[in-house]
Length: 176
Ligand code: 5GP
Ligand code: MG
Ligand code: MG
Image (cartoon, rainbow, N blue to C red; front, side, top):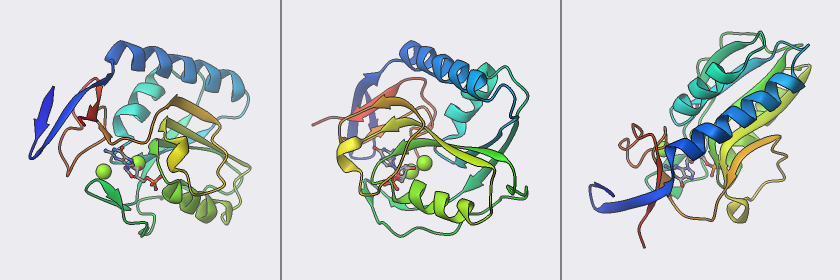
């Protein structure tokens, strides 16, 4: 159990379950991109832990970089997406893999995709550790999904509540 400010979080996905799934996704990606040298783009801050763990398990040549966007205030989505920051690499002609911590409404991922498609990558695929199908508002094809979860607020393993709680090995969920 973990209390942050006024909220209590309880265990949800254990560290070893996460690590096993990350290894499976990495193996799948390594097979799918064996002859394509992907450019892996992690979305900060939430995907930092997942991207790092995924990267350690991917055993083909790849590049990695990070971008930053912000669309979430506290525990409800604002739906207002800010611009993509920090991408110095050209994605034209590249095989791009976008790595997110969680797809909730899908607005963030859809907006990133739209902006990236305009830059003519050779291919683009979406990777997310967590996915809340019942919250999705966009027509989004997710290529690699770690766990489908119900529509509840989770934290840990990179995900925060008001900036806190990213530094846990397990994922926790807001207690009812
Ligand atoms: P979207 O609604 O655009 O799909 O989600 C945007 C961002 O909101 C995610 O990348 C993540 O940072 C944050 N988010 C969505 N659901 C949750 C959640 O359950 N917990 C936490 N900590 N962040 C979330
Ligand atoms: Mg995120
Ligand atoms: Mg956040």
